[in-house]
Image 1: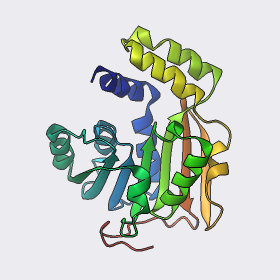
Image 2 (image 1 turned 135 degrees about the vertical axis):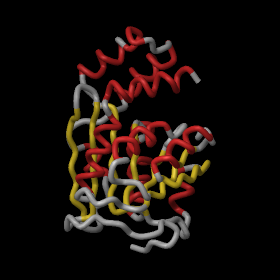
Image 3 (image 1 turned 180 degrees about the horizontal axis):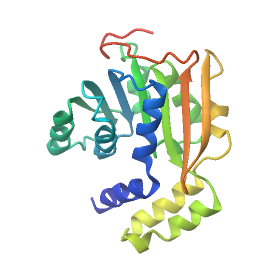
Image 4 (image 1 turned 90 degrees about the vertical axis):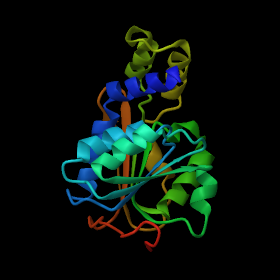
Length: 225
């Protein structure tokens, strides 16, 4: 539980919520989509931070929070609901859930500090599944760099415990740089890819269907590609 609190602190230091909110606005040209999913969503507080940054205009949203464990608290659901975001928490394996023939199509899928947990082969398989289920993927991951590694060793200064400090170092070493995620994205289909450093410690990857017309698919339960 303390490590999850530490993770919220680390997200704030990395400014990941600000980055994801900005990329969502950019992907949809300021026009709110209808259905978003976060994979590896944990307790849902990261998506809550994103929702709060978008709340002035993005109010009628369906959001699915997918994680292997059921961790989203009633308080988090209530706060999302107060913004106008209808929340569904799903406890499932991301590979199995996305591979279902009946799995919905989402306007956007968000991954925050999640993709670096997989080796290249598993990650390529995951990205291929994501490409079939969304118009836009926004991923915010650890930046694999000397500066980020140094920062991970200094997290004790902001109160992070030993587990969080260990995980941060491992995560940076497993992170991304250059165009590594772009190289694993499926080559079929027409996609516009952007991949870049963000701030001091983050690495951002955005995949959007080419044409610049990412927009609402409609109800996530019935959307088709």
